Structure formats: C-alpha cells, structure tokens
Image (tube, rainbow, N blue to C red; front, top):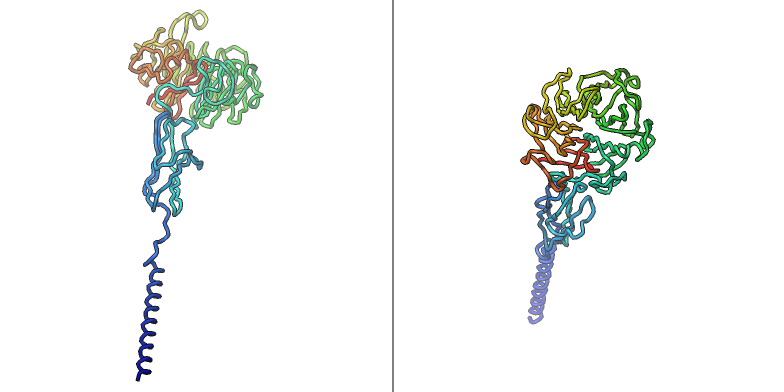
Length: 447
C-alpha cells in the first residue's frame, strides 16, 4: 500500500516537472519571436529632403534636412561629394556664396547607431550681385596676365562679346590680343601674343593683331574682330583667318575677301544668317556675306558702333567730334535704328551733350559701343559721358550707370566711379551687361 502511494507521488511529481519544462520552453520560444528582447536599431529616415537654393553673390543662404530615427542623430554635409568641415547640424548656412560656387551640389549624411542614410542632392545657384561688380582685371592697373578675376590683367580693353554659354570675349587693344573670360571670371588668351603686333593669320599664339577694335560672336561661337582695316575670324579652336580687306590698306571698295577695302573699321555685328555689318567710320556701313562679299549697306557719316536687334534692324552710333569726313566739321552724336533696307526708323540725339529724354531731347557725348538686349533695348557705352545709356525702340534715352544726368536710374553698386571712358559693351542671355573700362571688365546687373 505504501509502495503504491510512493509510486503515485513520484509519477505526479514527474508530471509537474515535465509540464514546467514545457511551459518554460514555450515562453522561451515566444521570447525569441519578439515577445522578449528589443529589436536591433534602424537607420534614420529622412522626412524632408534639402531643396535647391538660388541667391545673388554675397547673400546668405542655407540648406536644411528633417530626419527621424532612434537615439541621437549625427549630420555631415557634403559639397560635391566632399565633407564640409564643421557642417554637422540639420541646417547648413553659407554666409557669402560667390559665382564660382554656382552649380554646387549639397547632400547630407544622417547617422545613428543603426546606420547612415544620405539625402538627395540640392543645387546651389549663385547669380551676379545687383549693381556694378568687377568681373576681371584690376581697376586702373594695366597688365597682360591670364588668371582669375582681379589676378588677370588687361591693357586698354575695348570691344566685348558674349556667347550663349556666358563666356565674355575681350579685344585687349593695348596688348593686341583676344582674351576670354569664363562666366566665373577665369581669363585666358585665345589669340595673339601680348605686345607683339602684326597681321598674321594662324592658330592661337601664332596669330598677330595690329590695332584690334571691336568684336562679335555668331551662334556657332565664331568670333569676328575689326583690326587694321580688315575683318578677322577666330574659330572656336583659336584659328585666325582674314575674312575681308587688306591689312593697312585704306579705301572704300566693295568686292570679295582681300579685294575689298575699308577706310577705318570700328564696330562689327553679326545677324542670325551669318551676315556681318561693319561700321566703316570714315564713310559708311558695310555688309559682308558668309561668302566674303563686301557691299555698301548704308551711307552714314561717322559710324562708330553697330548692333543687330531681333528683327534684323541695325542700331548704329555716329559721332563727328570736332571734324569728320573731308571738309565736313560737325560736333554731333546720335544713335539710330535702321531697317533692313538701310532706311532710318528713328534717331536719338543731335549735337553733343549728356541729356536723357525722348529721341529729340536726348544728347550723347561719344557713343563708342552698342549692345542690344532680349527686349531690343540698346545699351550704349557713352565714353565721353563716362556712362552707360539705354535707348528704347522708340528712341527714349535714360542713363543706367555712371555719371549721366538721370539720378533716378544711376546704379553705382560696390564700385562707384569704376565706369570711366568705357570702350566696349555686351549683354549676356541673363541680362547682365558687361563693360570694358578702367583697365578691367565690369558686370552690371539691373534686376
């Protein structure tokens, strides 16, 4: 009897032990499936990506990111894939971006114990500052060095032209070379050798110029320069050829290529069809077809500068200062818009002076260069007034920069007095106005 009781007691004990083991095993397995230990930490998630920013040079801007994740988040901003020292917060401020900073791509790496996630890229666009700023060269210091911005040097820079990529081409008259300025201010010499004059065609440094005056650029990036009574062409690779005229020969003869003669070529412009228009200062305006045929386009006394508007009209400046052709002695300065057939549409100015107003009222001192913007407004480098003048299609004249007589329109920017006897002017596709003055090339941004 006692033996049977002991047997039953042992069996019951074994059942209790077995049940306990099973329960412990069950709960242990349940814990492995998420009911016990904490899961491994996850990498952060970006809720708001950095956005593109567009500012003017010198203006403060910032890039920001919004992220979430376990624990403390660490940030590292990168510019063009390179870590930015000290940029370790959710917001990265740039206090004074400059033109070389444009097109920079900003990303940020966000990290925690669970890993790292990298944001989408955001682009920084830097536009030129409002007013007048220095693009390249040193104010009132002549030189010939290539380089960046103020480290480059020019000697009596004259004609300017801007291509569709925003490169500015400069006739460096004192150095007898043709220079190129990139959109951010890097200067290189593309043809000629500083201080070495001549009339040789050739590639780059093998070419020679005698007294280059003005320059134009066509839609394909070819340059055209007036020099020593010839018209020269420079291909994008720097090869220089003579399109028309004979170096040093003075006359007024129509013809093809070297058979043509010019008396005193100054301004030059090119239309969408590739025709060239030349201000032959002593006598008239000449036209050169893409085949090199030179003809007389219009009889204008004392033409100096020339440009083409979107309708194919010519905008021409004339100035006869204390003298003129043969026995004609006049003191006058005008800016005229001519139709495709050579007839005058409107003419602003008459006798010398500096006055804004309607076509009849306005006066110019010495309009030496002209450029036309996308709205067909003509901008004139009025050298005698040390000013930049604007001429609308109806002939109304205002002064936009320099020492002119329209205080409401004067823009001085950071370089007051920098415009002194300007010799060249060009307008970029973004509306920036480029002016050669005071041994430098300036940029003017009006809006």
